[in-house]
Structures are given as structure tokens and as C-alpha cells.
Amino acid sequence: MQTNAIVWIHSLPEQEMGPSRRILEDLEGLAIAGGFPVIAYAVRDRAELSDLFRQLTTEAEQGLRPVLHVDAHGTAADGLLLAPSGDCVGWSEIIEDLRALNVATANNLTCIFALCFGLHLYKQVSLKRPVPAYLFSAPAEEISVGFLEAQTLAFYREMNRTSNVTAAFAATLGGVMQSFHCQGLFLQSLLQYIRTYCIGRLRQDRLERMVTAVLQRDGIANPSSAQLKRARRETREALKPGQKLIDVFAPSFLIGRAPAFSYADLDRILKRSVRAR
Image 1: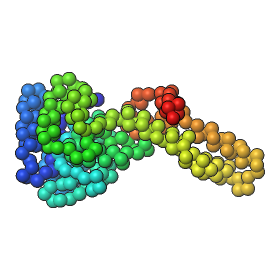
Image 2 (image 1 turned 120 degrees about the vertical axis):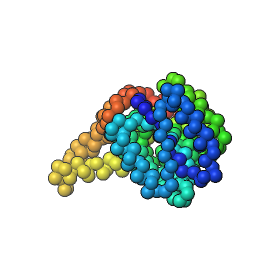
Image 3 (image 1 turned 90 degrees about the vertical axis):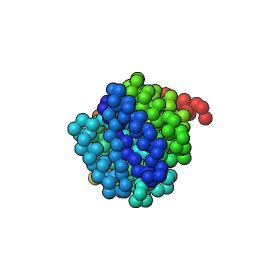
Image 4 (image 1 turned 135 degrees about the horizontal axis):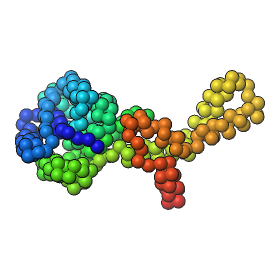
């Protein structure tokens, strides 16, 4: 993964900016000592946030590879809260902005959403769409300012020292926040897809729809029993999960990165979960 800057977006009421200013001052000190440069943006409303994402996406196309740190408030239902406007930007809208930015970085975007309920954004992840970040970190519930002030600088200091974002997160912010790596998210999304559509409760409905599509493709309006049997055999074969699932979804979801596992790895996990029941 490539990283060459810390982009800090803050949207807090003025009276709550003290901890953020202290962290930013310390980060600027790290930058002077040879760490990543820090670029801070104050965002006051929805329009400014949208404009900033477009600007960052353009800069990413020209080589920006940021750790994107979002310093604001959030709620599970309403998404990101912006100050002083009071605008709410839903998780579904933000994830689209992140997708565009991550595509522009060639899947080199790291996100630190230092706000309550930030992990709710990842409920919008789709196997059929590009992953929003190479690494995404956020709390699932409320998070205290004290924890963030104590651990944020430690995270960036460790990241600068080791160039290992995952290990730095685990040793600091990981005490309360959770993280999703794009490869792990791809694996879990494929497992869910297979369990639901290939071997799970929706398989039969999907099979019947595909049989109908096969018959329509072949121009058969009133199929004989032999034709139905042949169409079902073809459809069952198409529904068998295999390496083709990874090959179909990986290029778009991982934005050109090679998957870190094969179908044999998925199959072992599926078989273990069946035996464990």
C-alpha cells in the first residue's frame, strides 16, 4: 500500500476543537521530523464536503495517496453531522464519495473515521461495487474524546516509525475501534454471497429464475420435460460456487488488486462452518 499524506477533515463546533488542534499541532511536529505531511480541511456543510471529495479525487488521480482522517460527530441513523451548519450526510452518500476516491488511488486509501458510529458506513458495502478503502477503521458505537486524544497521535507516530498501518492501528486505536482490510472484507462478502445465493435459502428462487432465463434465451416457450431437465442441469452447474466467483468480482471490488486467496480457501472455511454446526 502506498501512503504519502495525512488528510485531516474536521467539522466540529468551535468549542470542541481544542483536542483536535492539539493533535494537529503534534502531527505537524511529526511531519517536520520526517513524517507524512498533514493537510487539514475545515468542512462546514454538505456542499463543502462534496466539493472537497471531488478535489481529493482529482488530486488522487495525480498521485495523492492519503490517510483520510475524519474528525466529526456521527449517528447510526443520520450519518455524518457537520458543524456549524447542522447538515447530516448519510452513510450511503459518503460511501459513494469514498468509492470514487479509492478508485482514484488505485485502492490505496486508508480511512480513520474518528466519530461515533462510523462503522455503520460499512453496512453499505456491496460485492458488486468497488471497495471504499484499502483499510477502513471506525468505532461501531460511541467513542470518547479522551480515548481519541490519547491514541490518535500514538497511532500516527507508530505508523510513521514502522510504515505498517495495520500493526499501528492494532497497538493504539484498535483498543476501541474496528478495522476492515479490503482483502478480508472481500473474503467475508464472498462467503455471505455463497451462503445466501449458492447454497442457502435463496438458491431455489435464483435457480428457477435462471431456468426461465435459459429457456427464454433458447426461444423455448413451452418446454418439454427433457428441455426443462436440461435447463435445470445447466443452471445447477452455473450455480456451483467456484474460482469463477472470485474471478468475476475481484477486478471491480479490489480495484485491480489481486485477491489474496483462492476458492480452495473459501471452501475450507465453508466446510469448517458446516462441521461446527
